[in-house]
Each structure stands twice: as C-alpha cells, then as structure tokens.
Image 1 (tube, rainbow, N blue to C red):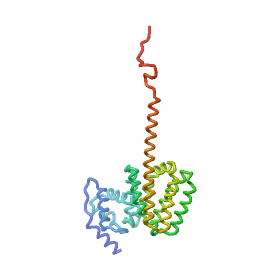
Image 2: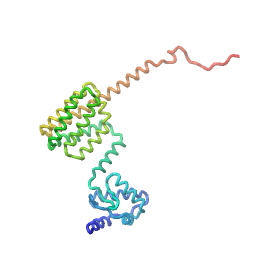
Image 3: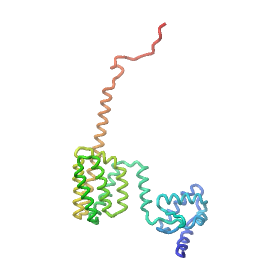
Length: 278
C-alpha cells in the first residue's frame, strides 16, 4: 500500500490544469506524455478520479471521456474495484494506431509492397537465424500445399498469405508479425489479382521454395535476399497487371467508340419539332 501511494504521489506534481478548449484531448496528451517520459510506467496505477479531477482542474465527465479513449486503444487498463493503471505492454495500442492509419489513409499499393520488402526480408533473416524446427516444418508443409495448388488460384492465394505470416511468426518478433499482418491485409485483394497472371503461380512457388531452402539451411542473408527477390518480382508482376488492365480498358473504350453510331451515320439527320396539321 505504501509503495502504491508513493508511485501515485510521484505523478501528482507533473499534472497541471488543462484549458477549456479541448479538455479530454489535453488530458490524453498529458497522460501519453507522462508515459513517454517514463513518469508513468507499465502496470502503474493512476491516482483516483477525484484526485485526477483536482490535478487537471476538470470535471469528471471530461476525465472519464479521456480515460475511456485511452482504455479503448489499450494504453490504460480500467477495472472495477482496482482503479486505472497503465497497460503492461503497448501491443494493442500500437496495433490499433497502425491499423487505423492503414485504413484511413489511402496508401499506394506500390508503396506498401516496397515496405514489405524491408519488413519481410528482416523477418526471413530472423526466421533463418532463430526459427524453431517446428516453424520450419510449418513452412515446408505450406510449401507442399502450394505446390499441389498451382491449378487453384484461390487456394494458392490463401496459402501464400499463410506462408508469409508463418515466416513472420518464425522470426520471433511480435512487432514485425503485427506490421506484416496489417500490411498484408491491405494488399490481399491486389495480390490475389496479380496471381491471375499467366505463369504467376509456378514462378511464385519457385520463389517460395528458395526462401524455405535458405531458412532451412540457417542462412539469414540468403533468406533475406530470397525474400527480397520474391517480393520485388511480385511488385513487377503487379505493375505488369496494372499495365494490362489499363491497355484492356483503352481497347474497350476504342471498341465502344467505334460501334457507337453518330447522328449523320444513322441516316436520320437532325430532327426538329413538327407542327400539327389542321
């Protein structure tokens, strides 16, 4: 109890009254600032609502709104009878922020695929360095399924997603896994369409096979290079697909314009209103 009181008191002098313009936002900013500086640590309890209202110089409704927002994104944990404390880790918070940015900001698919080259190259290298035998066995099983699904576009696409997530899991880096999973979610539709290109599935399978070879041999740099080559090839296939779609759209437009009859071609001429005869 004495330890809790001392930790609560250590925060009190750093809290200051907030302005009236955006009270809950300012409370959020102050608490986030204290966490960033280390004045509020993981698992540490906040002062009671009454004390916080006094320190911030605000009413309970504004305070509760701010605490509720921080709880929703995972910065704080609020439990009945136990008060409010800082979350033990920031996984949920970071994930929510990244996910929100990816959803609300329309990122160019090429930019996201370029980011994947760096992230997944690192994941492949880490998987080769420290992935378990079980991780490698999972990748080999997925590879076998991909080989058997080269005539089934939808099935192959689903296994492709599983494969890349499995590599991220084998890396042992939770942050990498979260970021790769979110980016893959944004790219899912585009990547699925790219695999419809002629010979895309056999080429993709060979690239995945090489990645597993390097990971199995515990060759981090080789695994990174194999993953980067695969993703860069995927990016080029995406660009090829975009060009094909653009050309097809131009051809459809030209065909439509050629078939559309003009007024002069119809032989009707320009029609004008007529008068009724008496």
